[in-house]
Amino acid sequence: MKNVRILYPCLSVFIFGLICVFSASPAAAQDWFRTGTGLGVSKARVAVADFAPKSPAAQPMAVEFSDVVRNDLDFSGILDLVSKSYNPLQTPASPAEVDFKAWSDGPASSQLLAFGSLSADGSSLEISAWLNDVRNSSLPPVIGKVYRGAATDAQVRAFAHQFADEIIGKLSGGLPGIAATQIAFVSNRTGNKEIWAMDYDGENQHPLTQIHTISLTPRWSPDATRIAFTCYAQPGSSSVLTAQICIYSTASNRLISWPRFQGTNSSPAWSPDGSQLMFMSSMYGNPELFITDTSGARPKRLTYSNGANTSPSFNPKTGQQVAFVSDRGGIPQLYTMNADGTSQSKIDLPDMGYVIDPAWSPNGQLLAFSWRRPSGNYDLYVMEIVTHQLVELTRDAGRNERPSWAPDGRHLVFESTRTGTRQIWSMLADGTSARQLTKQGQNESPNWSPK
Image (cartoon, rainbow, N blue to C red):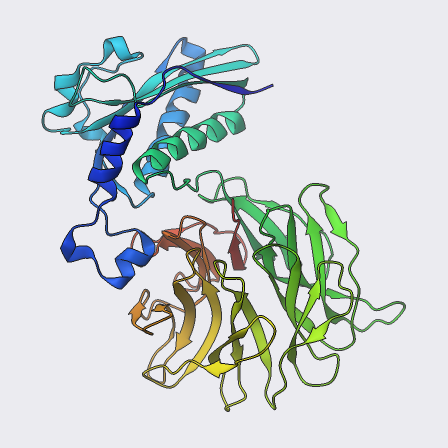
């Protein structure tokens, strides 16, 4: 059984100082976008020493742990990671071995140092991990923990993600990191479009469903125990495939019974409290938005228009505002309404074109979407919902669609054809640091887990 033991308590005064120094944005960075994403903060300079193996057999695991921690911190968007080439030759395995001056002086010029040791004895793994302020040797470690578990690569990666998230949490004023989150997506690499999942960094890609038809648009429930998605199921003995809403339980690893409705049913969206599902259905003829409880009982119609209405997305903060797409005006455009269907209104953009795939940021202030302007490609944009100010995140690098926010509000995952095939990518919410996560087959419709 794995466990984590705290070695040193964090000093509340020191942590308060870190929050003040590293979470306060300079006046020049107080624009709506940086404020909304948390990317406009002053950044701590953090070094990661190679974790010291306690035996030759532990060397590969120590290397993997160190590399995963570095990668997690580098992609966090809230700190300045010291290049490994700048690290001093001295590699501490415990706080008593830290040469504070060597790590705080150039070329490393770090303020904080992550370091520790790893031992693997048969099937048992033990990792001692610390984070120290190397500019003040009188302070005890900011973080000091021992991780114990099975001596497997998967466990090493899990502990590395936990340690990185601990560091990120301290430097972001308590906002959890995302290294332990997952991304659901659609892949055809088994011959059919099935729902898959992977770690946030693209590792551990594996299928969840085996429906053997077509599965689309996965959406995590707020507690991350279920995934609602569009599935093409056979109604009874008929050979006709119809789009329906399916629910997959990540706890029991199986599909949960959910009613089927007439017509086409797709694009499910969970309410922030997890008690309701909104989806598109043509059960009465025209594609409209409906809402129901999670059992699927008594669906209530919300939209009444001449065009198709689809892709609902709840504001996660209010739970009362919904963005969706409708072509009632002739082409797909962005609309908002109350969760009960009232106060439907179109969001006016400064140009024409097709708008699809709206997704709310966790703080409820920003809306990401894909927009094909008349003279351009499908690219990703972010809008501040009150002022309607826009920022373009991608530009003419293939089709870029289906954005989904990480729970920290600082990262986005999306699908793109920029390499010639449809693949899953992630990036910081300002459009920088794009990383390709999938390479096999065609992959689409990513959705970031809430935790």
